[in-house]
Length: 198
Image 1 (cartoon, rainbow, N blue to C red):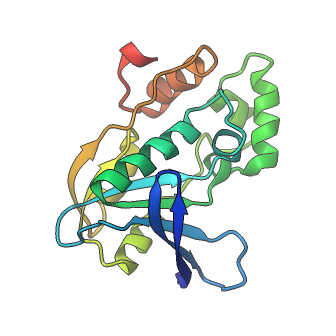
Image 2 (tube, rainbow, N blue to C red):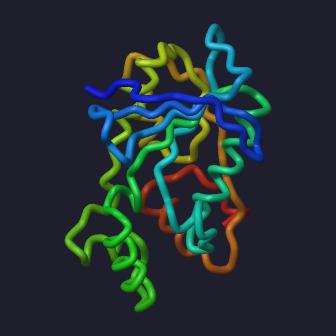
C-alpha cells in the first residue's frame, strides 16, 4: 500500500504547488507525486491530469513527443483553475529510459513507437493508472474533470469509485518530428486527437 511519505510547498514558474510524494517505502528514490494547486476546491469536481514521467521530453525538451509541453500546459491550467497533477514514475510507457533509448534507435531505422517496443519484446504500453486512482483516494478526491486525450485513462476512472464529471482535451500541435508519433497515438491507441493538429 502506498502512503504519503513527504510533502512541501514548491514555487515554480507556473505558480506555487503543494507537492506530495507517495510510495510504499520512505527510502524510495522514485516516488509517485501529486502536484496540487493552492486554489483547489475539493468540494467541487477537481481538475486532474495523470502524467507519466518522460525525462527526454520534460528535462531535455525532445521534439519526438509532446510530453514536456503537456506537463507545462497542465501545470499552467491547474494553477489557473485549481486541480492536481498525478505524476507517475512510468518512464517510456513504463519500459524505462534504457529500453526507451533502444526503442528510439529502432525508430531511427523506420519503426514506429509501437513496432519498436514489440521488436524489443516489450509491451506497446505497460503503464498502469491504478496507482493514480489510489492516490486520488488517499487525497479523498471523489469527482474529477480529467485532462487527457487517452481513452485508457478515461476507462480507469470510469471503472473506479471516482466519478468522471468531464474530459478536458490537452492537445499539443505536432512539430515536423512528432507527427508520426502522434499519428501512432491516434491510430494504434485510439487517442482523441484532432487531425488539424497532427
